[in-house]
Length: 432
Image 1 (cartoon, one colour):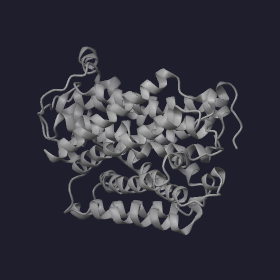
Image 2 (cartoon, helix red, strand yellow; image 1 turned 90 degrees about the vertical axis):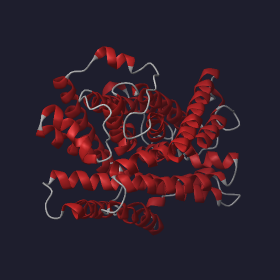
Image 3 (cartoon, helix red, strand yellow; image 1 turned 45 degrees about the vertical axis):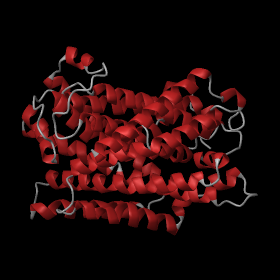
Image 4 (cartoon, helix red, strand yellow; image 1 turned 45 degrees about the horizontal axis):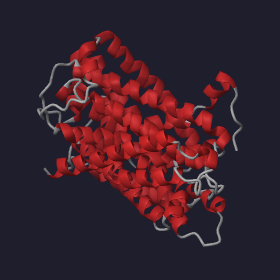
């Protein structure tokens, strides 16, 4: 168990899970949704990004509260779900694994596309992306055999966060932005659909990809790997989570502003090269390189952690559901799933190798896959949010002093309402 950090220096050194999750949460979904939103609708939908991040902070904070402050000596959120209904952990684990496959289809394709462009597009253009994606998946498969995968992800994520913050932040400083339009974009306006995707579908993608999905549950395991398992770690965990949210917000706003200022409103962005052209139109060829660099770091730091987290959710869910009646919560929660051969096979085959098929030339474009999958991700959010509300509002599950106050429960109910709305919009948008 990790010691509780003291002082500002101690807190800074301890930070890690929030930054790792920031890059995992960012994924290509944020890059695409922010770019498409800014290019097609200017600043108008920016409120959805801010709302989704506030929702995520409230939601993930509640998940962490249960992990750190439950009254059952458990460090697994899946154990909490089992206390509500025994089959629930398995159902959520299966849902997470299925959504994880969807994420992997576009994330791996995005990483391959970015890498192929960064190395100068050698050879056959149609197959170059697939070959590049295959090489990156191969590197990730090798990492599966490295001890303490989380430490590797944490280091890569910290480097990527610095590069992305510096790069896109510099572009905004050079390019400038319209303060009046920026503020107007926070006023809940929903313009008529003019671009390649319906405006409400983009909102659902932002909230589904950022504000509420099974991906949030992965924070559980990064806290475990960090050794933050007691109420004494609650304060540093909240600071860590806040830092992660700020990283996401700044990077997303920088991407959004850059897209909004290119004056291509109404264009149809259905190809990732169109997104790269946004920066190219603004600051020249360096802008395109910056986009590909950003996409590469976001995707390459994402699919290893996604495949790791979503597989662990599946195995943890199965173990919690099928645990013997007499098994203690601590015994189930502390199982080292990632050291098992089954874990590596599930992660490697289903969340790394098979999704490679969507990098083939005949498959849907990277942008289309991203918007569709992130919209569908919102569908699972309401069930999970309801379960979290129940777990954190009763002393039956939580230590009495940490039970939600009325305003915390109200905030979670609002988040649940947002999740239901996003789910509805996702279904309507995709079927319409």
